[in-house]
Image 1: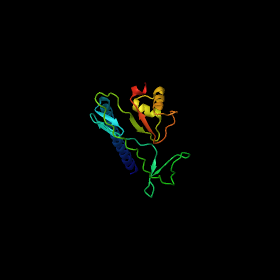
Image 2: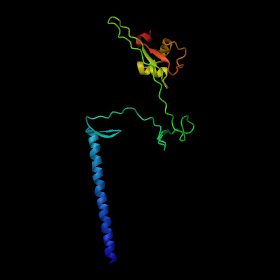
Image 3: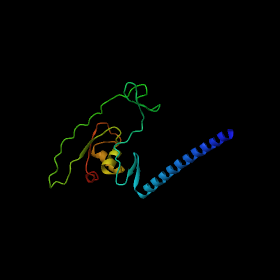
Image 4: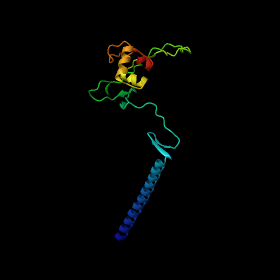
Length: 177
């Protein structure tokens, strides 16, 4: 009787191992087919998963990387590392409306014979520097361009920007004169 039970146990174990093996082989075949499809360009990988050829994924904005913790009160709290200024786990993040930039005055388009365009006006926001603004507006943050932009706006120091300060950004050819 024990021999029959032992034989049934080994048969069941062998059957389970065979089922696991066939499942694993099928899984590997699917992975290989997917890899071949990706290599041939039929399918592409994106942050949101696999997409078929001819389709795309648009990512609007990216997370800052700072974890947000939900609290019982429903007010999210930003989890900051110790030693970094900001709200802690115990205090909720203050909900403050961002200051609005003053509306730019409407500028009439230049007359047909007038080739000189009006300056672009920008209000300095938190985290902006003159070199970042120059790189974004002119495509370069070359030191001579940054210095010329500071002179154009009457700044004695190119690092002396203030939050909310208006800056005039002329055409690059006018700035280089």
